[in-house]
Image (tube, rainbow, N blue to C red):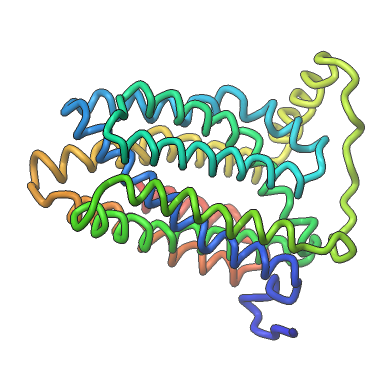
Length: 303
C-alpha cells in the first residue's frame, strides 16, 4: 500500500498503520473511562475536592516517575514494553468495571487503581513516543507525531460523547468494560507488527547503577537547557498542564450542580474540548517541522 497524500506520509509504513488502527479503538475507550471516572467520583462523594485528589493520584506518578520511566523505557524493547503496560491498563480497567458493576466500588478503590495506572503510564508514555521513530523512521516521525496527536484529540470528542450517552442510558460500569476490551485492539496491533520492518535506532548505553541513571537524567536536562526550541516546548507544556488542563476536575461539578445537564451533557461538554485541539494537531501533521512561532501562538490561544 502506497500513500502519496503529503499529510499522511506515516501511513506508508505497515507497522504504523497497525499502530494507528489499534490506538483509534483504544483511545476512545480511554477517554470513555476518563469521563466515566470523573462522574463516578462525583456521584460517590458529592465533593469536587475528591475529583482533584483522584486526579492527583492518577497523574502524580507520571510527574514523579516520568523522568525515570523515560530512562527505563529507553533501555527496554519498546514493543514488548508497550504490550506489558497496555496489558496492565486493561486489567485495571476491568477491575474497576467489576467493582462498579457489583456496586461495591469506593472512592479509595478509584484512587488506588488510578495510581497504579499512573505508574504504568510513566513508562508507557515515553516508550510510545519514542516508538514512533522505530515504526516510521526519522523522515516521517514529525508526521507520525502529528497524526498521533490528531487521533488522540479526535478520541477526546468521540470518547466523552459516547460515554455520556451510555452513562445516561445504561450504567456507568459499561464505560469501564468497553475501555478494558478496547485494549485488546492495541495489544493485538503491537503483536502483529513485523520486527523486520522496524527502523534501526541507536540505543543508549545501559546504565550500570542508579548513579548512571541520574547522570542520564542530568544529560537530558543539559540538552534541554542548550536547545531553545526544546526549552520553549517543555515550558509551554508545563504551564498549559498546570493552569489550563484542570477542566477535567471542573467540568463534572459544573455539569451536575450548575448547568444540571446530567451525564449526557457532561459527556458533550468534555467532548467540546477536543474540537480545537484536533484541528491544531492536523495542522501539525502537515508541517515537517513546526517552529517556535506556532507554539507561542497556540499557548496564547489557550490562555
